[in-house]
Image (cartoon, rainbow, N blue to C red; front, side, top):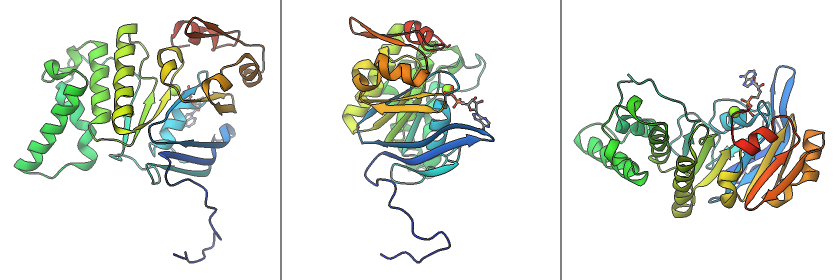
Length: 282
Ligand SMILES: Nc1ncnc2c1ncn2[C@@H]1O[C@H](COP(=O)(O)OP(=O)(O)O)[C@@H](O)[C@H]1O
Ligand SMILES: [Mg+2]
């Protein structure tokens, strides 16, 4: 098909259609400040990409671009084969763990059902039954059936976060965007949420973009790392990016990456050492 020529001239064959996420020459600026530019990233179906970097480096903003909540200042982006748009059923989103209001008048299954609202399967009995079946399946997949009807605000942080995973998966997404989903969970819940995400990836080939301060809980799952620091970034396999040389370059100061048993410990960068050693919010 030949596209009619427009005032913009010919479009470069920029993004890759088959990729789950395809970003070309992406730039995001707010006023004078550029968070990142020249960012090229393809995420393949089933691939797990970790997005790392100190606070303020633009990790959440990248997720917001992919969710269609923020517009690139330059470049092109496609996700699940389309331009990002709000409320896409093909995109699952797991936000940071936050305690919900104890008096929130919402049951576990209502929270999960919100993940279907972008593409309600019609009204009427059949639609309601289909909807209920999908919500039940998503609840079962995260082990949340027993608290499906409990008020969400009364559940533990780990239980609430499992429900958020179910909400993200209930729409059967091609891409899962996770923004620090393990923050403030204890180690056991970190492990279970991570396992749920990985199971989905293995079973359905869902691509995962996972923003985190702390790589260790997901280290065995990570295919590639995007590491952002103050406008500089590096993309590559974990062993290519998580080195003393690369992180020293990114931080502009001497940083050591140590391997201690099966963990990576980053020492010497503001906001890097605290985060990587303890997994706390810096
Ligand atoms: N809509 C916006 N307008 C202006 N500044 C913004 C906006 N969104 C984010 N920022 C700024 O961009 C920077 C990066 O934010 P963010 O993407 O949240 O970083 P991270 O998630 O890596 O901590 C922050 O300094 C933030 O204040
Ligand atoms: Mg953030």
